[in-house]
Image 1 (cartoon, rainbow, N blue to C red):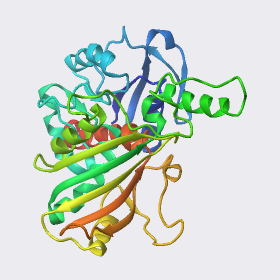
Image 2: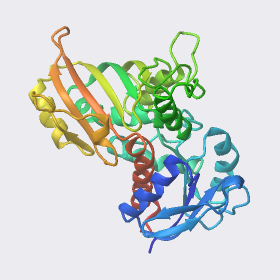
Image 3: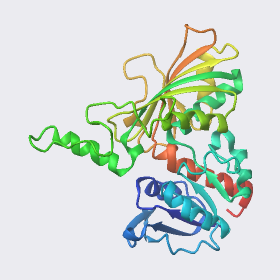
Image 4: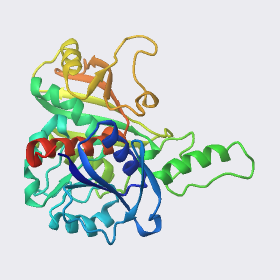
Length: 340
């Protein structure tokens, strides 16, 4: 017996990936519906070997549906998630709207699967920010061994994190640079993204950090451990898909780099590719379409007593969004709903 599943925002990058991954992982489904905004009604989307026509999110009745994967942004989520939840349909939300609500679990299944049990308070579960999701997958097994005190992370985030508009802007600007008179001015991003990097994602806060950086701090504390100190610098780079992170970790106890490598090799959701030779590491383009969070460049930090450096790469549309949402649905089914 399977589930009746809704995918809201099915025409966007993340919504399409949700449908792909549900099919790839053979999630137990009796019935599935793809929802979109009114302007996209009737758009065809793929679900395995089937084609679905999107229906109207605004008029959809969620009663009788088991779970809904939302990829519609915070404003639409604010309107439709409470309606779905009130109708008895558990919402797994990819927006930032509920991440910091103490009554809503924020879940990365490899890290805190048991938190799913708290969904009953609002019938909603939150998916974390893409950059946080891959980082905490890497941190969790190391934290269990040596207890992390502090994390310093610099991110190199692809334009797909800004949606289709971000992808289009990089593509159009790159083409425009080679065709005189067809240059494309920045629109989605604050400055030219083609052949450039921009140390600015989301809005600036009073302390000089950006909201993207604040999210990584707040979400790591909620998911992993409230006592971990985190400082982040988040940078947009001219890569279409795949987020990369340079992570410096300070532990309470000494952890040898060889042991850290062994721990990560055995950890769920992680693949270690760490050869100290040319090409012996993973870059974002190699992560595209993959489920894993890849770890490379594991090495001791000799500037502090108990430090490790590592390089972390993942497909942000998958582990950073759609895959994590589907994994939450899998955990929800097994732990709580128990129909599949």
